[in-house]
View 1 (spheres, each protein chain N blue to C red):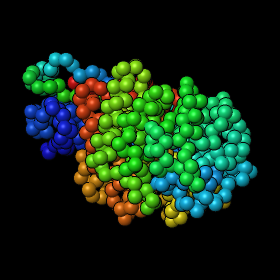
View 2: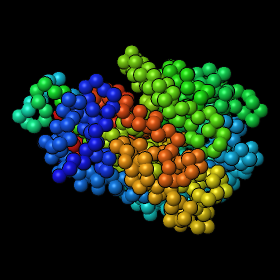
View 3: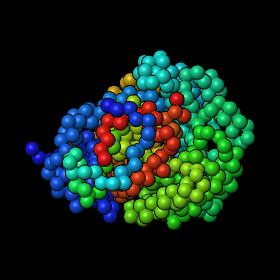
Length: 56
Length: 452
């Protein structure tokens, strides 16, 4: 796993090359992101506190 | 080997989605390359390498949690008679308060329970259990609630969800001085719209009182406003978010009306109309953010984005199957009974027993809780074959049971949830998702898959 401080990486402005197996040069780049953390949500439709830090 | 990925048309000019519903994995691919992506290649190979880990993560989220929050109903009474309330009118008009001594005894029992389930120091990350005073209207029993907040200040992180009509200066000073998170409710940008669904038993407007409370809370760090979306206010959702942004509301929810009790179904909007009005309001929040640099978070939509980007970072536990009721949290009714969620308090068959007589563990294991905590979208159609079932969770079990005839049925807004997921995926494709989430939303997360 790789720790990344940034949010969702912006899509590249130039297509990835076919050589690295992602997509041919004339195709829009594939996007796939998944992040993970210790789950601690307890909100429901009648109440929410979104910010995880504020929930401490 | 067949591909686990399913194509999803998200309505984007360039991109389609592929998902593995079993793990909530997704990718956005050029529509012209969809066939190649599904048939094999580096993306699929890398996903196969991590599929088991994603399946374990999702399974732990869906079946491995222990409660870390409680919704406390300190009274059955409410000074309002809202059209869509999920609590029976007879309770709200003539019900009882929980005595202060009982409330304190209940919090002591809950403190001991959470010390076991979470660990004395908060095994889940050094956090306190959350205790949310909830409706009916908790400030109808204000003295007991405020005494409990002081008596158990070291044991719980408190919140109050209130209609706002009893939130006078003294109450706001008390709550904000103790960093209690505060939720309000308002259904219209003007009194005539709010009054259509939220008014006193005598039919009086409460719109201006809620606006006054919002004005007093401006600048406080931890407050939000819920709008319940009905046929009455659907054309006004854009004006609603403009009002919230102007009042510097940090977070709102634009919730579909919960159709648990019959009164709510009379004002239920159709899915298509709900989607159009909701997305127009979301678009307006984005324009306001770009103009002002200040976000108005629409929490129920942000939670859909989180379900896609970081499933374990969800804040709301309605949009997952099984839902959070009886798993991540439970509810204590004013008569001392435990329910999976406040949404079930009007439905006696879901009463899991008395806190002070039977305890939390007995309720969690009870036959009353079992249908809720085992409701699994993998096991019934149309959810079982739906590509986005673990971004949505088919909420809510209470309305599925009461409105649609059983736990193995969808909730009230299936098509609206599909539209939300497509909208969220289009935002990700366009690089705009962060604009709809709070700054630093992924602090403390790890990136487990990153492809571009």
